[in-house]
Image 1: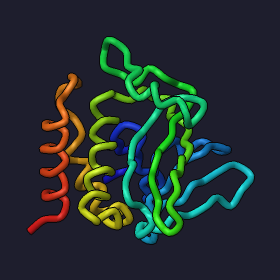
Image 2: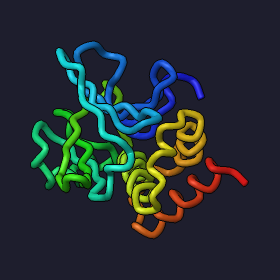
Image 3: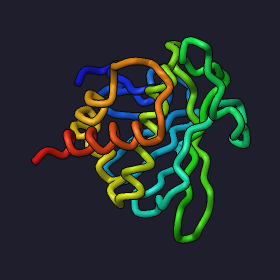
Image 4: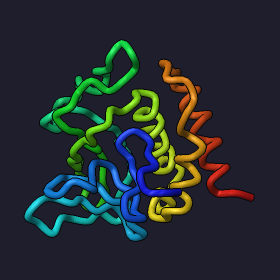
Length: 175
């Protein structure tokens, strides 16, 4: 896939997949690396979370602060994410057990609600299946994203999300 490929806030920039605007200097974003997630922060080396520590609680929220959990459903009538103040990737980690919120700055482009929901579903299902390390393979992520992008921007059920995600994982993994 070429730089600029995306699924909601997930985008390929410089051959690396990340959640948030990695192209703009001085932003917060979360990179998918072979060894785990890496939170990029302005004026900091950031912090890393190994894939093996992620155990659940995966969700995306929108807003300036991580406790804006009610902003999970702020969408426009045209099916776009309405919040523009930023986003958060929430995770539950093990050893020690803790909830973690990773901040990301939004791109200038709007996000389709269905794409954000599909991304969240993909992340959640990979963690549930014990396969989050697949996110560290840029080619694998590219195949999964290609399968999940496009289509109608309409409200979808949990069952439809799970089915689309299951198909994307199978397609990306191959025979």
